[in-house]
Length: 248
Image (cartoon, rainbow, N blue to C red):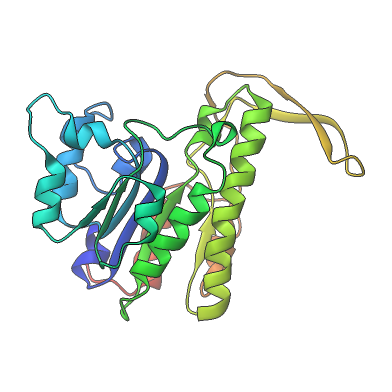
């Protein structure tokens, strides 16, 4: 993200967890511990992320040091919002959406469909830059739902709706690479029985945590063929640098 930003591209992060949680944080923060949420929030003031949307309002506004980071973000030209409706109304090229105090609610408890809206808004905002953009969208709570099949299925369906927004944009632009993958598998989900006719599946979990099971990579658009096969997860970085022709 920092390299893309330095090369004039717009950058964005979208997450259903707190925006300071491990995955989104890894694209913006320089911190030795993933749990240092308030310190991680400070790294968003560096300006390398143009649009970030998720939970985590407390890390920016209800801090131990008493500093309201959202005021500083506003001073830097960000349009800061706290609801999905206000997010939709933003017109700035720099947008912050802090849509919950900590993590966003579960898809099964009222959040269903919001990730697609968040993703669409991020694409609309970032695509105004003619040089291009880089956007990371995380369906964070697929991981959280480990060992709860109904919740996990709901989160995957919600994430699929967000992927559809990227897919539709990529089909229109013909210049956009879309990658769908994961940082790890969670809970060792196995599908034992099911019925395509009845749209039902029976699942089982062999773990309550992250596993070493390989995750798939789905890709479409320019350069998609590079992402077939089996790779180390660090492989993506240099591929993106090369495809975007970024100067380090």
